[in-house]
Length: 250
Length: 314
Image (cartoon, rainbow over all chains, first blue to last red; front, side, top):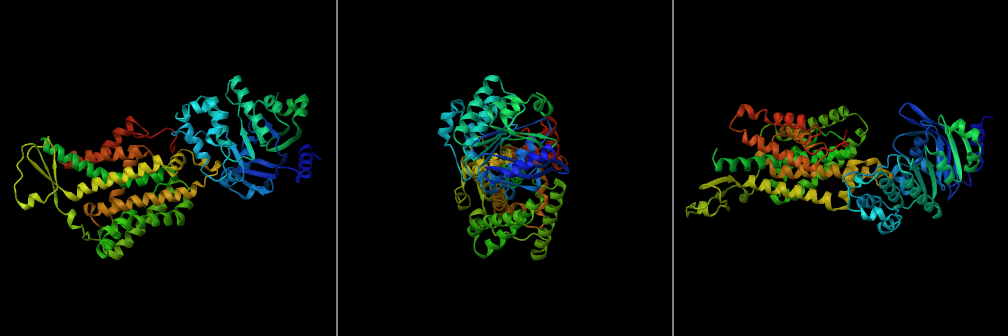
């Protein structure tokens, strides 16, 4: 049995306990076959690092879980706390508790910081109030009337996370949260992610800075060519130099 | 050109701009939110003018003022739910083909029911007269014909000027409708979602918003504005089945010159084209091409249009 198949089987065994359970996902961008039969589980309240080289299919996996219009999930199932995400579209998945913080933050231009937060509270299922958001992110409070795209990269990342937290979140999907940020800002984002964990919110984190992600994570999934190459403890990946060199080049 | 001529051309430019703005605002709202090139938008205007003639004639003008925009709102939503929604992910060429086909069906339908010729539009009595503008020192004759006219003092006018009341009413109604639309988009939560959706509809879906349902309402709103345009613009543009097609091309130019999806841009551009048409009226050869000249100049200087933003529909 290959490593991938073993991992998939191991994941299958834990189906009942998993908070997020992805079963044999096959996702496409048009004709491009990106996610090629991935299965993995994420326990409730933990942080899972989803790692792999560029083009391995990490972002596609997150977008598939968030039920984006593209990629198309042609086969497989995604279960979140007993709810079939695979049968939902993006807005229904969001109402079921999935919040994606996309790679490029996707701060909505032309509206203020506060309006970006208000927009997050339009649909049913809200989380932190705007005032609570400002308590956690005082810098956003200072810039509440500012056009959101004029924020610095770090502030935009904070706003993207804050916007997700303004909803009732059960599963937080973070795509490259440290990308392009100064070390000081990265530490701030790390503190936020740890705080999110302390609230019992399950997080899946895609990050090029694998070491930083693994230090924060409880479990890890390594993706290679659209398949699960490894699934296990984050610490195990940190300790296994061979595994890191083979799949993560670190 | 005298001061009086300039004033008259300005008012005419405003009136032309107002009707283009009403059509173009609906177009740009639909284009900006749904990304749909709606060639049937002129046909919505056709439905509106005929509905206004029928309802105005049968029940009364005020009934038409209320019922026609509401009818168009429903027609817009039915059109979006019945046909347009299936073309969101299709190329613009497919959208143009289906909406153009729809426009032809509506135009031919109107022709079959009402005939191809202009039919009279029952303007209420209070809108049929002239408005009198007079300057300092002008002596208004003390006869009922003048005394009954609405009178406006304009200090820079020499003597007296007359302008059809209905056209002034059209300008006023247009600006009220435009102001109402801007207020809806700027000061309500629905408007905030629509504005945000114009910039990043996928992100709104990730935030749990059923943007498709809101966009259907936006399509209905675009049609509602065409309804208002039809009720008040019908007597000026004539009531013929092909009037929608005649309005469509300049209205699309308004959208492009203003900047794709920009509502203030569409308003500014409509006024610019209205003024260009009005002030070139003396030179009929130039007037035929003036809006295209304006389009060329604006797009050469600002390729995204007057107020088009980077990343919007690019």
